[in-house]
Length: 437
Image (cartoon, rainbow, N blue to C red; front, side, top):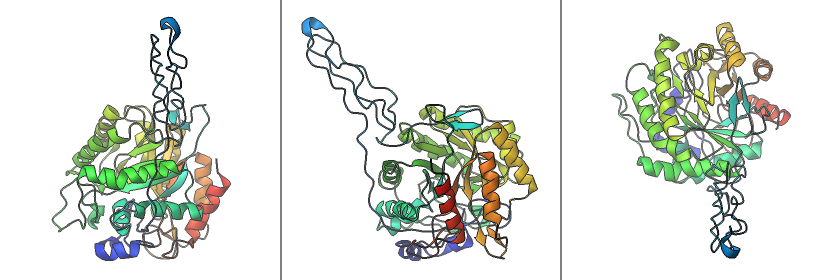
């Protein structure tokens, strides 16, 4: 999500981000306009770069076979089946012997990362069939954090370190990748370092540090993914657009984005794809949006057959029950909902209940601010957070809290050093501690 606060100059954002950013998340979904959706956001800090794990090592054998027999150890390379490891290379052929086979199951791009998960019925499961519930936090625009780090991924990795130090990292982190402009229901947000997709509105929107698609991936996104992977986290790559998908160009922009990005992380067992942050489409039915979502799924699946895909719905992801009742075609699909005090009404509760009875749900945005204001994330109830926690624990949904910052809202941190938690951040911390897997 985003807010009107996101319209501040990108230079001041960069300076503020060195500790904690300033921008806004909106109202209307994760960044939508006031009223129906999510809340707002901001933040930034400097950190250390990502590191790559060792992955599947080359199989041990491949020594000379006697009389043409297969070389000893020509079997699968060690590490090929390790969690998060790359394919084992297999033993080389012994003299006169056969080459060892390639290791299996090690499909992640960075070794040491969490193992692949799959969808079975309305559950998310690991390789042993155990039900898994992912819980964690969302970062702000990773392009803003990159700029705050002096045009370095250290700004992103430092923010991940802040989450870990505060005990709010859980086992998954959401990485919002902003296009050239996030339309944000009339409150456009222009990332200082966007992914170069989209044309933008009539409003002038000039990136501070524009990058090519290849440079964005190699300098911003991949270092962030690899660093989080090295910390043992699952990662959501979130194409963070807030706009109508049934009209305009944003749906096509998302297809372009996933055509570029999906192949690059297909080998990561711990990476989930969120095709479109929040379709507004408040007057559209799910039947109208569904074929567009199907197109994104098909684009991703053409290059990434196994990664979990998080399916959106209409009205800022407030109709997961409609989507779950007539799901797109495909495997390993989860369904999202973006929940804030201002939209969490009986209709939305019923939609969530319907969805969780049919499919695995990933609430990729939720949060609140204890205030009596009119923002979608404001609540005067001292028990909103714990009441929400009870519902979600009962439904068994996965989640990432929005947002890990002191300025983007609803804020998990109180100070720019990101060392003091808000009541919302404190609830997240306690929830994660009580449900650690």
